[in-house]
Image 1 (cartoon, rainbow, N blue to C red):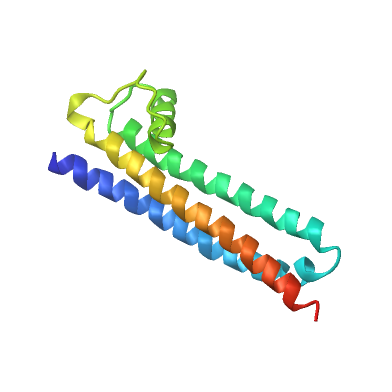
Image 2: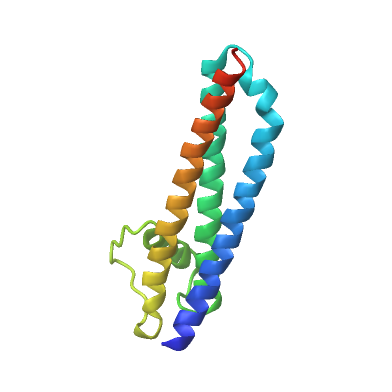
Length: 144
């Protein structure tokens, strides 16, 4: 049990670092396009900024799922990489289909993956909302 918790915590830490670094990168990207975003026409530019952040979010989510999948595969939990990716995606998104299960000696990792998915989704949702808020504030502030 302790090994599962330690490994799961290490995987969660890795996905947290990836998400945090991506947030830092996103901040740099948004600062770089600030001048472009505030120029008219602002509506389409707001849409473009939101789309960029959504794509950024998808990349981060994909990276986090791959971290879990590669860890499960490296541990020998699943024979194929495809099964590892599938389980990681289902667990990370908390779908929990139940068609592929972890062996008993690794079953705690499923709950940790689900908890990690909830936390990463929450961070990315907050990032999306904050981007939208900051973009609108910048657009309004530069209007005069």
